Image (cartoon, rainbow, N blue to C red; front, side):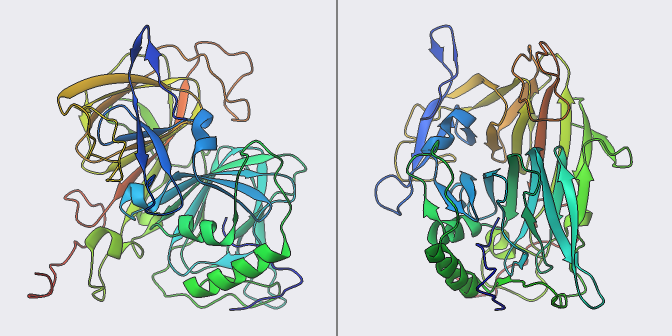
Length: 415
């Protein structure tokens, strides 16, 4: 692992009930709250298989100081069966990890507000300078597994990033390397020497590397995808019609992401050579005022991160509200009768919908505006509801968009 101690920084990049009148449309789900590990994962669960984390609930989630940033866990490994993790990054001026590589996962970074300077590779000739680009709000950066990437807020103003990685693992890395947040609203502290040493140790355990300046790019397999930078305002990006008739801008396709990670999470053991992994499709939607369309049942995990306006979500399933230590996505202890619930999602709300759950979206009257997002107009009322969507595909899915499926395990491997 290449380290320069003078320049090392850390690698890595209250549930709110929604009510209509006197009727509560969601319950609280708690996972890991009785000693399985040190973090209690609290989410809002309107029905089983749907998990919601609102911005107002971020202080109840596991959060860590790392690289002079505040990383809040929106989706932990235990909540996704190790398939992916997701975070809210608050990046103050000067915050951000130095260039580094990942051995286990790829990462995406959607800049929600402000601007951040990203490292997206290394020049191929001496002096091997880092390739950097300033990334404004409304843009996603895909950092593949293996090549050098990183980010730094040089704008002089705060920035915010929605981070998504596949497979899980970064949540545990942030836990062991960072400092757990006691007061989510307190000022973000600067990096410390203790953090530098913790980060260096745990990064080496994972096979990651901090990358000092003027070093040739690391060798990567020929199948490694390229970095992708994609904006919601880029007219060259493909568009598609979503399941509710809405127009979506495709920011990142499975072909661009590839499928070289997460085979273990999706297919299980053993790690057979050439086995495909998971992949995703990112898209952006801006929904004008409209009612609910017919329900849609996806065979994949669907993720929404709301960006502006109020997006309404209708879901149908068994009653939510698991308060035990079981899987928070479908093993609730409440009434198992099928119910239909409607929740309103304000900006910066994270939603995870498991396969097989019937749902629909609508914009019943957007009045809530996230001021940092580039398509919002201050004081706008009744405008569009904007959201980032992520569809997570695994090779076990029938509609997997890339070649390959999970192979059967060798005979006699499992009882």
